Length: 291
Ligand SMILES: Nc1ncnc2c1ncn2[C@@H]1O[C@H](COP(=O)(O)OP(=O)(O)OP(=O)(O)O)[C@@H](O)[C@H]1O
Ligand SMILES: [Mg+2]
Image (cartoon, rainbow, N blue to C red; front, top):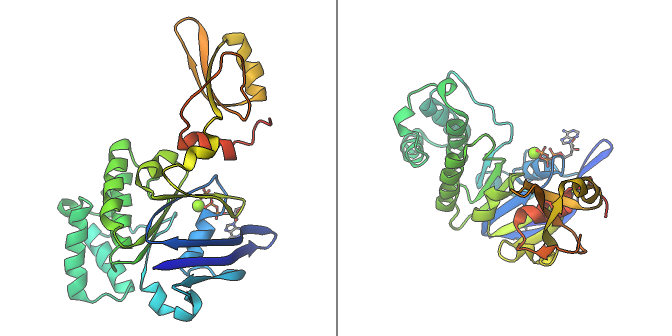
């Protein structure tokens, strides 16, 4: 399976949210990272066919998704960023409701609902109203409804928003279960969420993909650019204005340990340390300081 964006563009009045994007996705889990307003949601809405491109197109195995129409939409599972829940529905009612919208017959809806609610750990609260659910429970219900139709392409817009660390781990395991032979695209600005589960990292900035790399080795480009150094308290301000300080820790000797992302060695005693995905993200997105 191949999903191809060909010079995909979306313009809203005077704002170009997705800008001539050409990328090809194959089966696997893609982590879409980007700062607020980078264009992630706009891209995902176009992938799901709820928003039409201004120009360019999306092709599934060489066919325009516009031509494929309903045959394409059948393959999609979508968890929107601003997913609306019906507080007075029970989890089960809500699943049946979504199944009806997706044209799934009653028998299948019933068995699928049971299977999925069990999988996301909500079977014992299937008859409880959604208004009584925690944020994490609602997100899990959101994921369950997105996969009701056994989608080949699963699009999850900020699926981990509002989840606590334990729920995050649970979510990662869920995605691994679902992702076999599928294209899964999930957006987030929480870097650690995709660090573990994504096969490929896509980094989006100003409507364009600036990084498209296998997760392994994605930090290679900043290999010798992450530094650790110990400075005295009164040096911190000066260094912070000059360099991109990504972490700051006070040590027991009244000194400060800085983690810095910089092309050049920031001070004499700085040593190179192993880069993380978070360092890479900040390297590209933290425009607060200039170098
Ligand atoms: N319907 C719309 N009308 C006008 N502008 C829009 C519309 N939808 C999005 N935009 C603009 O497009 C840009 C990209 O928005 P988008 O929601 O795709 O970003 P995002 O990466 O999902 O951000 P976030 O991380 O905050 O969810 C923003 O500047 C936004 O204001
Ligand atoms: Mg968004």
